[in-house]
Amino acid sequence: MGAGHAHPLYLDRAGRLHRLAPEVKIAAVLLFTIVVVLTPPTEFAAFGGYLLLLAGVTAAARVPVPWLLKRATIELPFVLLAVVLPFAGHGERVDWLGMSLSIDGLHGAWNIFAKGTLGVLASLLLAATTTMRDLIVGLDRLRVPSVFTQIATFMLRYIDVLADDARRMRIARLSRGYDPRFLWQVKAFAVGIGSLFLRSYERGERVYLAMVSRGYTGRLPVVAGRRAAPREWMVSAALPVASAGIAVAAAVLA
Image (cartoon, rainbow, N blue to C red; front, top):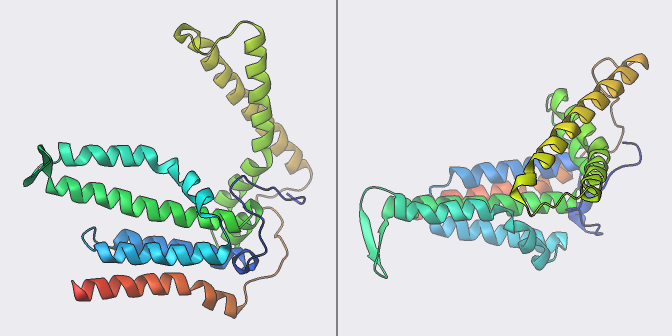
C-alpha cells in the first residue's frame, strides 16, 4: 500500500475538494445521504435543492458533467425496476395516455429514482476527489471497525492480481476453442470461476501466514499523515447542513 493505488473513478485535479482530508469528505457524503433518504418522496422541491447542491460541489471539484453522468448509468437496473412499480402497484390509480398507473407506485418509482440518483452522484463525487488509499485511511480515522478497513485494504492490494489471473484464464479458454457466444460452453466459464476462487483462497492463506511470520497481530500499522483541521470540518459541513436546511424548509412550506 505504500506506493498507493489509483482507481478508475479518481480524477487528478488541483481542486480544493481534492485537498480536503478524506475523513471530512466521507462524513459529509454520509450525512448528506442520510438527509436525502429521510426526505419524504412527495417533497419534490427538496430533491431539486439537493441536486443544486451537488451541482455546486461538482463545479467546486472541477468534475466534468459528462464524466459524471456517464458513470451514473450504473443505477440503470434500479431505474428499470422503478419503471415497473406504477404498473404493478396497488391502491388508487390514475389514467395517463391510456395507461392505468398506481399513485403509490408512481411515488415509489420517484422515490427510488430521485434518492438513488442523488446517492450515486454524491458517491461518484467522493470517489472522483479521493484516492482509494485515502478513502481507506479516512474510514480508519472515523473509527470504522478495523476488520472492514483491512479487508478493503487487501482487496485493493490484490484486485489487480485477481484481474490478471482472470484475464490469463480467459485467454487459455479461448486458445482451447472456448466461444462465450455458445450457451453450452457456460460450464467452462463456471469451472474458471471456481478455479479462480480456489486460487484466491489459497493465495490469501499464504499471504496471511507470511504476515503472521513477520509479526502481524491482527491490525495493520497506522498510516501517518495530516489529519483534518477544524476549518476542513467546517467546510465539509456545508453540504449536510445545507441539505438539512432544505429538508426543513420543504417540510415547513409543505
